[in-house]
View 1 (tube, rainbow, N blue to C red):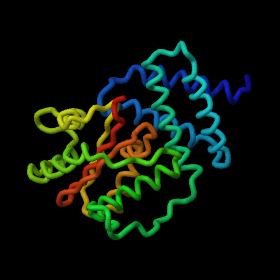
View 2 (view 1 turned 120 degrees about the vertical axis):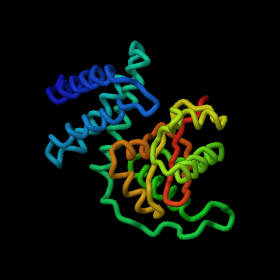
View 3 (view 1 turned 60 degrees about the horizontal axis):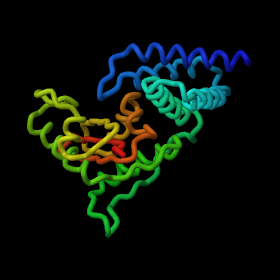
Length: 235
């Protein structure tokens, strides 16, 4: 086995072992850990070799995922590693990010306000550059995001967890949406482009936006509070 491939396999095994020791929660810290770990590995490579390094790493992850003997827990961690790899591929192989003019008004057939359409466009454009599927707005998540944005403004707090301990998983479940995975981003600004900039410059929030396993979303705003909810529906 070539030294480069052997090195990547060792990194995979070490990352899985370390991530397996982390506490699992609805806002999985494994994802942030793996994004940071892979980011450090990418940064250690010469700039002209980073794309090749990430593509080789992605291939190694997929090979491990295809093994029938792998445990469900490690399969989930490999899926997170794949998300982290796609995240860094988007940063190293996509064209430099240039702002284009987003739609400034909703099309006649759409009742959605411009700020929601703009945020949806910005996120899906970045997902397209990262080879992630386009997110679809889901009406069942509407009340979750909008109600929580209004609640945060009224209570004058800024947190993913309500004082009673409820998190986004609880809010989405209470709304009747059955999911396999769910994530939430918060931003405190009226401007959708500024909100997008704040979120994409945070590894954790950027990972939520680029996660290829997510297919549904909703974004809401009340006053300056903006709430994004991402979800993968249950089969």
